[in-house]
Amino acid sequence: MQNISFSKRYAIPCLVQLLQAMVLWAVLDYITIFWIDLGFSHFQVGILMAIFPLTSLILMIPFGIFVDRISPKKLVIASHVIFGVSLAGLLFTQDFWLTILLLVVGGSGNALYNNALPSLYYKTLGDKLRGFKLGIFTATTLVGYGLGPLIGGFILSACDMNAVFIFALLGSIPLLILSLFLADIPGARVKLADYRTDLKNKSVLVFIILVFLFALHGGAEQTSFSLFLNKDIGLSKESVGWMFFIHANFMALLSVASGIVADRFDSRGRGLAKLFYAGIIISGLANIMLVMASNFGTVLATRLTHAVGDSMTLVTRSLIISNLFITTRMGGNLGAVTATVMLGTLIGSVISGAVPGYVSGFVIAGALAVLAIPIVMLAKPEF
Image 1 (cartoon, rainbow, N blue to C red):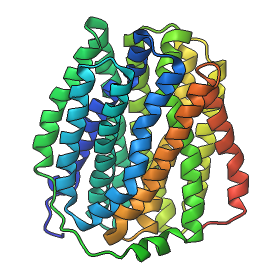
Image 2: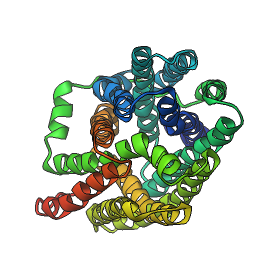
Image 3: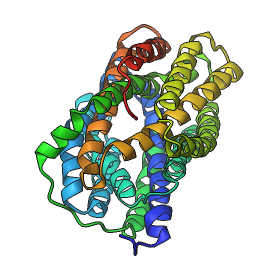
């Protein structure tokens, strides 16, 4: 593993992560508007957006175990092919039930990717400046998350949603090519009992609870945020794209800074819990404040505040994962953590689709996350 080049260890995974996020969010951030315009109800949209994380939830842990036993590189490549099949299908259908089936296929590819590439990155991370490296990895995800909606918004305004699907499909080609140059880490024999032992640790259980509560607002973002901007605030699709772009890139810069700060806390033995708690509280309060936003400027101010909390939480969460679990069992344990994220996103999507208005889901998710912190602190987890 020491002979792996810098590009294979860091540069290529980060670039793949950026492009994958760009392709994914160019579709996800506008597909809800597309479905509403087709005549689907808000509740149906909530169900459709829940299918994606539900599929990932079911498959994440099995895929995580595969990642530990099989080459993660090969699984990353397979994930791009599976996700591409889903995109091609969505390009040609407007039927509700067929859309559900295609989202199951896409969710499978997304689950495989979201375990295989991060696991590969963790397995080659090394011992020094881990917070900074994870901050960079998070930042590339966020740059892609910002670019995707921006590009998608321009394409959607000039053409239609089918053009966005075509853009995403074309983006799969460089993803496949780059993935061929990822580091190839051989699998290892791992006992299932070892995963159970890891996950029964008190600190791990507390960590997973917080991960779940924090993830609830992700479901609201996927299901309702674009609709809130477009339908309630009255923003054009280009303005929706700019909102995501500014927020994501600001958050990317903060992620690098959060990684540097997290390294200082980690190296001095001060623990990462305080940073983790602070990030969740800031994020949750900003989600609640969204109810007072009424135009582009006030929404942006709220989202930039939210970015401070989210970046701190995401980077600290990644560093805590690297501390809690050993690399040979990273895939399975990361699968459990990511499945928790998917479960939170799923429930957040259903809640956001079921409650009145496009902002209520954010308020509920933010309140639950903030109120949980004092309770969790009593457990005194070690991370």
